Image (cartoon, rainbow, N blue to C red; front, side, top):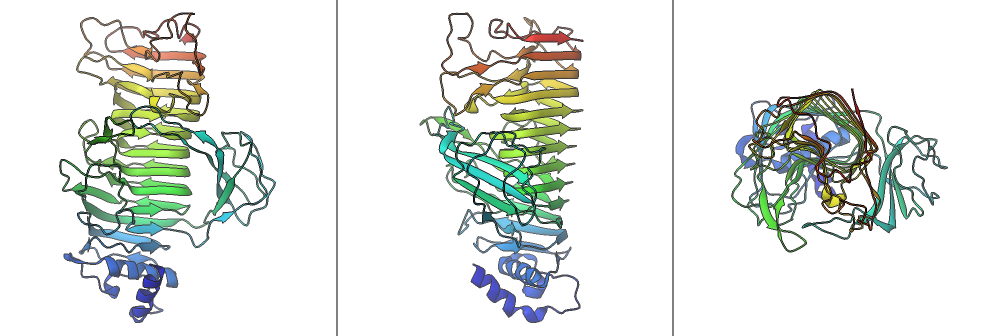
Length: 507
């Protein structure tokens, strides 16, 4: 592919002049009529722009058609898509895992030698780096996130993502969360000092028609460079049938730091069914946003085209191994952290029927936000319903939606304490709800009030119960200015024994 891109750049080099300020797709043969396949011209234009250090600008009146070819446009300079339209036809892709645009750095990742162990909360590495870097540590001798349920698996190698400066100082805002007895690999991804900006453009994906199996499609923007900003990008999906393969995110943000997505529009995909690892039917997730091994990723003033409460569509975002994720002024169907997030913030937003699903570490802060779901927080039971840290909620509204009669739970999950997830499992140590309106007026006839905690473990109801793998229950919950539309007071939990030692402070 690199040889092909170099060939195209040389072939069309005469189309560029030293005086020009940007590169266009038309200079490399794009038609832009929505019918002729412009993929090769787009690839060539970006290759030439990278060589000259020039931005790329699409033509506002054009519609660029991208067929099923497998060549990838490598993006290293700013892009202004303007009001141009792009049609991505996924009905017959040659390589379903190839992105359309791959945003990369001129700096290559490299292996860091000499670091044999790591400690949780460690402040400094005994190494020097050529620049500030995002580091990814792995211990393949230890398995974490051993998933339970219909999508069960044997877990993954212990992984940590964090930031370090040239002198090895670790950014305390993204701390190390695991102890590493052995570091089997440590890779460094240099952080670019200049922010690359991608602006505008309306993209429509003609959905794939593949079998409904876990065969994730890319055909997207693959972000593999730190310090990237998206502004005003719109993504739509058309042509979905009653079956199809899932997508791994139209924006796939991986192995990088400091990515901001602002004023963008996304589309949730239909929920399909397949057979999971346990041999039983499961709902199959498909994402428009995917974030993995990334630090400081922010979604600001973003929306989705599909109704956030329409259960026919899967949740918009999925994430793994992230730190410091932010929603600010977003209207999305859900927030989701699969294999852990360390520190997350949701403010000035509205979340739909899939709510807040998370496991992880540190502080989860939710402010000035409305959550329309069966629970305000759902601690994912397939990963142990664990959060090693605190929940803080301020000035929010909770609209229970787990059935037409509204019966809501503030914190829900399931303690499967006979399964080894690869770590000790915790409920948040301290939970604060300060200024919460619970809109439960549509309650059933027999209704004692909403719950703070769900059942969690139906077997843990007496001193006779013995846990194989201990589950650490919340120590303290603070309830201040919490009101219910029903007039009912919050009930601690239907499981009075399990939560008997929780200190409840009502203000």
